[in-house]
Length: 101
Image (cartoon, rainbow, N blue to C red; front, side):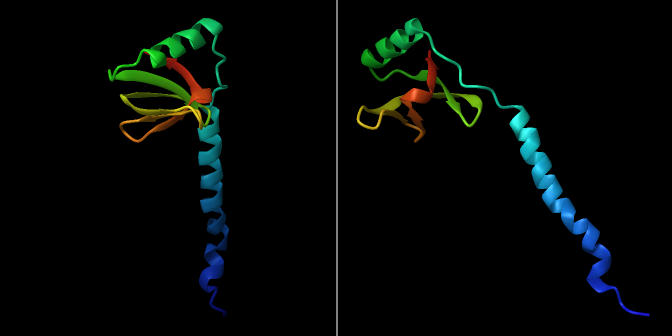
């Protein structure tokens, strides 16, 4: 009689890849499309950024299929690369910004 060794466990080896794929599919179900912002909303965002004086704001932005919310103050507005750099080291691209309160 031969020793099967690791051969008997070979069918269970595929479970790792199956779980990874199931996690990936589960995560993709929660994704949403990037919302389009109106002209009024774009003007409101612009007004807030132009008149900014160090107060804490709530930023709503789109990233990887989700709308994320971050509460912080702005460290720097980089017009060249079109991004906001927040005090908590989060970088938000202006094209991904969907709202500020």
